[in-house]
Amino acid sequence: MTVSGVAKKRKIAFPTAQRAIDKLEKVGVLKQTSDAKRNRIYFARRLLDILDEPAHV
Image (tube, rainbow, N blue to C red):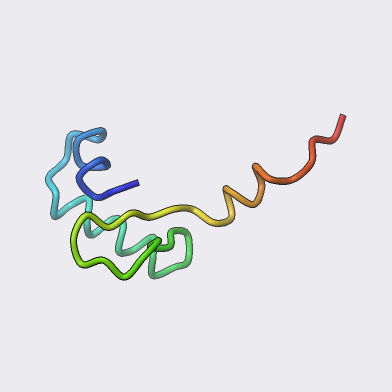
């Protein structure tokens, strides 16, 4: 996800989306994919780990 994508999807201002993502990154929910200064992309590692787990049927 990107800050601009979150802002657009949630219909909030870019700075508001940035603060929310910063908070989620600070507590370890999100992680930035690279060291880019612009157009940063974030992902939720734990969520991806869960999706990679084998299905239990």
